[in-house]
Length: 269
Image 1 (cartoon, rainbow, N blue to C red):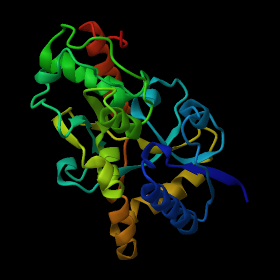
Image 2 (cartoon, one colour):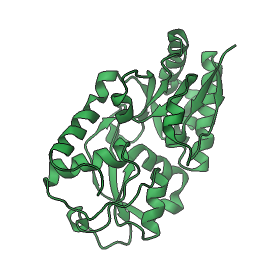
Image 3 (tube, one colour):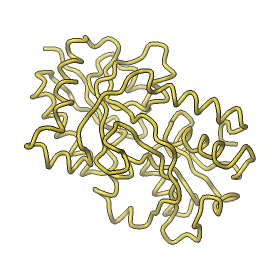
């Protein structure tokens, strides 16, 4: 039997979350009948190297890199976060956060201070916040040179707590998971503002993965929200279940990048 790769690096934000994703993938392999090899591919390994693998069965991929690919991976299913603000849809936001003890009360208060970012290829960690600035606050330069790249949401939090940055972006689903599994760390962080919703990163399979395999994995994932025996797993993963996203959904990340760049918000300088 052919084995396919499963990976949750984007949302394995704390040991408890990483363990819960591995449990989900073990359940998924059993429920779908697809042999899955769970790999960590932890930082500092490049995500592009993971996304380029020909044997992916279920790995999280950011929507903006997905939208920019000529040969797109196959969308399997996308998480539906459990919190009320997601409205039962497979969407997410970027929370713009500061230290809990910082003097800043509004986003405008942070202008002129140090804005962190994860990577210039990330929607939640870069693209979403520059579009937010451009669309809500105009084309002027609000920050000195941005600080980063910090690569992961957790490293954004650590940078804020260490005083290396004054404000930074958190993928809202990663934020939920860190509050669930690293509450002591997150007690030192608060949110100032939140961006518009965007389609959440989906679990993807490589273009070479047979459609029949993708369908089996998708069918199992779409049943997660209806299975009473998975209630604890859903709680551990801050999930209500999984839903479908479509290739056209991620066009919004390209549109927001174009709008931000047109207003002068390019790469951090």
